[in-house]
Length: 257
Length: 320
Image (cartoon, rainbow over all chains, first blue to last red; front, top):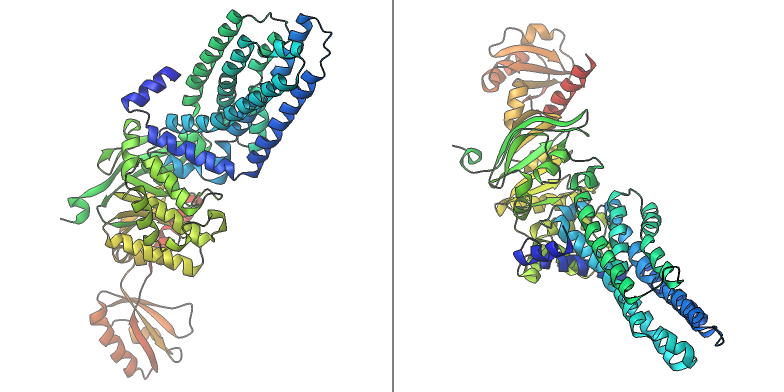
């Protein structure tokens, strides 16, 4: 089911928004009391905020414009790591942990549909990841505006660059979430799921890196194309993952026939 | 016409489930009436849990048909069936970091139920857990967690409540608490289908029981099963072994055969056609033989005897 069809399904009553909300609320309440997730949500943003700030403030003002653009691009790439790594870590454990703890089977005995459960879990991973990523971006841009050299500030505070950053946060997070959930649906072990989930979420970031380092010349058109491509990938990934959620296999570790 | 025939709420017809070459259960057929407490017994690996999962739409049967709460058991009807039933899995599967109320709120949402607060309050009252509503589930004992699991199954007022080993791992006091809850639910007219290893609890709680060992071995109420499987009998105990028991018992009216009870030195089992006819004759014969009679009573077979008889038959058949 594509994202558009999912929305249509909500409107037609096939996807029950109350059930999706229940999943989101439960997941976020559980995250808030989970030391591992709280720790990850605290440490990762600090690491990936301090590093770019140091990097941008250490940039010499004698750099050429293209060299400065490359420096700013690579610096801002760091800020995109959080919306990739954080939701990948969360979503990669979302199903496999419930299987391990025996909480999945009672959930599956309720009228909740697989799509409702998956969308709920995806939104619950997206909301904190996007909120943190935007907060980090805001702090970074504010620091640059207030304290950086004018030349560096001009190169950083460009509209298209910020727009791309704003756009790529949910799109990259979306990819990372579906990759993480796909791993979580198939995995039998939480640690393996975390490692594979993080790995599977990285490919789109590689293209972002190529743009940041000017290997691919970043233009507004390219950024839009890449964003559309990511959007399609997110929708396509969902189409692949929803059928992978095989209740019988998740409960008995055997495929349904 | 019985309640089962009048108003069946669960009809299972030749249901079979295989996993590759392994058969979980085969050719299982039975009917459960509305408001009935139905026990599903069997040894480990007999297919009890797989049957419950199949009827709960979690596992697709390989063949056969079933109607659950009036709805045909088909993939397209899975959501509708799950709205009308509740399943308590063997492990309650609670979110340990969430409070009791938060756990129940989640399931109110998953069922899309109105009056959630009222339903949670009633469910907690039914399991006597109102005072622990704010406690996190990690802080509860196993027995209390089981009660939370049971409260969760009451939220949607199910037509059929499936309980999979609800007293597994509980101490006798906690198990008694669960028995009381099941009795209370029966009084409220809830149909209860529960699997158990505890034969005494099945005997005490169930209107009917079925014994499954991959195939359905028997079905009926416990006293019917006893009569089907065991002859009527008398147990005679004397102070000392009789010098010639054959002379005392053989040929008495109503006594078909006799043998010595291996568990006691001076006890005898008599197979009889009618205990009420045979008992006075047996007592007279014992008095005539100058035996010191300690007791003469009708032999009582428990559900455990029925269960062991059937399961042992299967074990012996598999050895042949």
